[in-house]
Length: 564
Image (cartoon, rainbow, N blue to C red; front, side, top):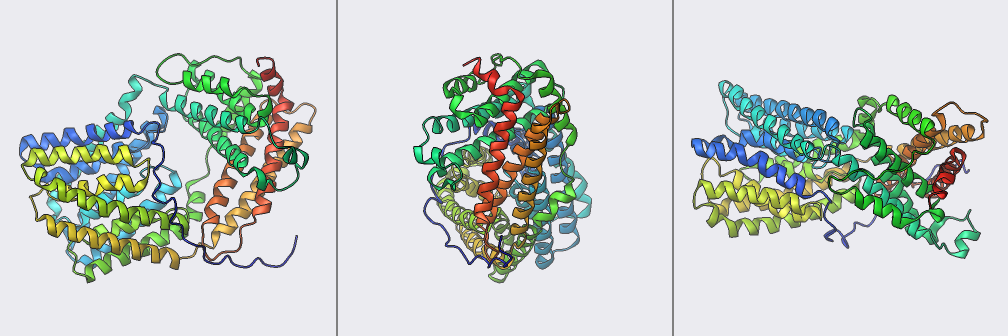
């Protein structure tokens, strides 16, 4: 390998094609949509009945926590939602205390930017998303600009805590009907992704088969399908590891995920139809399809060994996020200050717009900026149409907000800009809980803050370079190589320790998933050294071959063949 230092990657062209393309909805889009309606509706209608709708902003802080953790198994969801509620309460407490101590907009914007940066760091490090840090930033920033006195803070925090407890109950309630729903969905996704890869591998071209060592440029679709399958299988295992006790349904799901792993390792000998049939059977509340355990004792030991390994410490996960955190702090602060300089009455809207932009790299940040601007502008027009109806009375106002809550969650998984169309009028209507305002002034402020937040926020992202992206690829490549060599040694061993090969196989699969995610993130970053594409592709090919060899070494492939 050449010792010459790679040259920096120049600025890439920013995409426009496909940024607004509407995709397929999430398979559980209705769950967060219904949850947020119930979590927001009960407190707001209660306040409406009491004639204190002016307090709805504080209950909204707790209610919106119901948007989180819908993909997590219920044992993990209980913990995650509790931390989300506590995090929201901490952010609101800081905001309300600050608002009670000072009315300086300069100070309030600075505090809001710092809160947004901390929220970005913690949400990305814990991977709590979607909706990630945006909801936290929206609530804490709005709280900063709400007039407050110190003696009012405990009561307002109590309202937020009560609504947060209600949101926790709403988020956990589906577990009474379908206690293994999240794990079943994750397993079904793994089976469908493995089936898609197997279907693309049924009849590989002769040139590809004859030149296995050549770069896979002619089979990019197949490589993407394999990467998607590996990511889905890894996500399914992570879901199963988070379920707590190994119940009988969980054991059956583990067997199905093993079948998905087998399909990725030996696609030519796999029946995609059977995988898809198992995935369909996982819908609803029926029994989990039963498959005979593969190498049962070794498999279970491997699962427990991986559970015991745990996750990386939080401090280790925060390190690579430093450039994104700096972008958030700088972009939010500058957006708020520019909005103030323009005389806009609600600078926190510009701050939140900037906070919503920051994704894994510059290219994705640009795409999110376009989506945000388009969605907000259309949303302002929708608000203009709905405002006369909402102004018929407080009841109409609450019902309109609930409708937009549902619409936002129903549409946002298809494309962010579609969800923003409903989020924008909802945010405008929330400001009217304390009293109806002039629609023209609200719409003007929203348009100006959206444009300012998007332009200034993206400029900050360009200014703060992410030089660490290249280092992360090197680290990911090293991790894959170490995991591959360890797995290869166990394959060659006459009698590896019980569970060792299975745990090594999964560690290698997780390292490959992380490598692909790291490479994709770095590919959209500016002003860094060139991504070692060929090295990444070679590491992926050799890694997946080692996984396939491990499957054959364990006898899983042979077991699958006996059932074909």
